[in-house]
Image 1 (cartoon, rainbow, N blue to C red):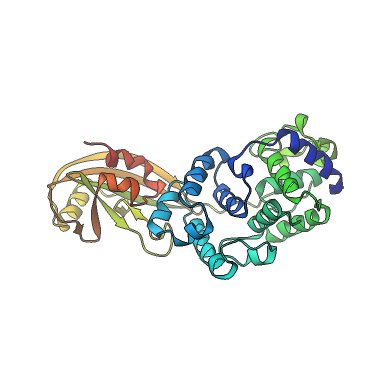
Image 2 (spheres, rainbow, N blue to C red; image 1 turned 30 degrees about the horizontal axis):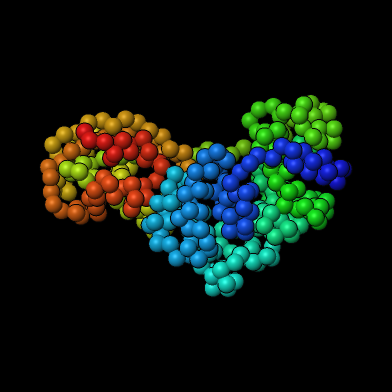
Length: 350
C-alpha cells in the first residue's frame, strides 16, 4: 500500500515545500548541521542559529578547529550541548579520515559521533542522492496513521520496521525529496498535538486512520516516566560591573558550561548570607530574583533566585567562583538557557 503514496507526495512537495535556508544550498555539511539543530527545536527558531553558525564556521575544517568555549557560545540557546560536542568530534574524524568531506556512504556516516540512522539517512539522501530513509517523529506519525500501526513508536524495533518499509518504496531518482516530503507533511499537515489537516492532505485517500476516524489515536507511545524534580537556589552575585559564574563538571548534564552559582534545595536569606560570608565576600544588598522552571528530558529544575550585591573586590577568583565582566558574558562564557530567567540581572544595572 505504501508505494501508492510516493508520487502524490512528491507532487505535493514540489508545490508546497517551505523555503528554508538549508534547502537553498543542501551541501552535506549544511544538511548535517541543520538536521542536528532541528532535533528538539522548532524550524523557525533554528533559522537564526543556523545562519549564525554557518557564517562563523562555514566548513567542516572550521568546526573541527573551533575552540570549545566559542563553539558552545555559538550553540547557546539550542540546548542539548552534547549534540554540538559530538558534531565537533565527528568533524575532527572527517578531517582525519575523509579529507574534510562527509563520506557519501550511509554506513560510514553512521560510525561518526552523534550521527544515528535518521541523520545518516538525511545526509545520504538529500546531499548525495543515496536511497536511504530518514525516519524522525514526523515520519513515524505519518506512517503509523496511514497504516494504523499500533506498535509503540518509542521502540527501536518499530523504527527499524518503518525504515525497512520505506527503503523498499524509496524512489531511486528522488530519495532526498521523498524523505523531505514525509517530514514536511508531518510538520505542516499531519501535525502533532491536535487534529491533522486531512482535508488538504495529498495522501488522505490512502490513510486508514482517516477512514476509521482514529487519527488522534496515532502514533502509539508508552507512557513516559515522570521527570525527577530538583529544587535549586540560584545566586546572581554582583561585584561592581562583574558577576560570579561557575564552571560545571566535564561530564553529565550541561557538561563544561558556565552557570550562575546555585545550591541544592531552597535556601533562606540567612543561609544565603552565610554562604556569601564563607567566601570572604561582604554582602551589601540581597533581593529576591523570582522563581523559574527549566525542563530537561529527564529532570526539571525548580529554581528560586536571589540577587546579591557584594562589596567590590579585585579578586577574580573566589573559591570555585569566577568574577567576569558583564560584556564578557555575551561573547566568551556560554551560560545555559536554563538560567535565562535571571539573565536580566546580568545584563542590566541594579
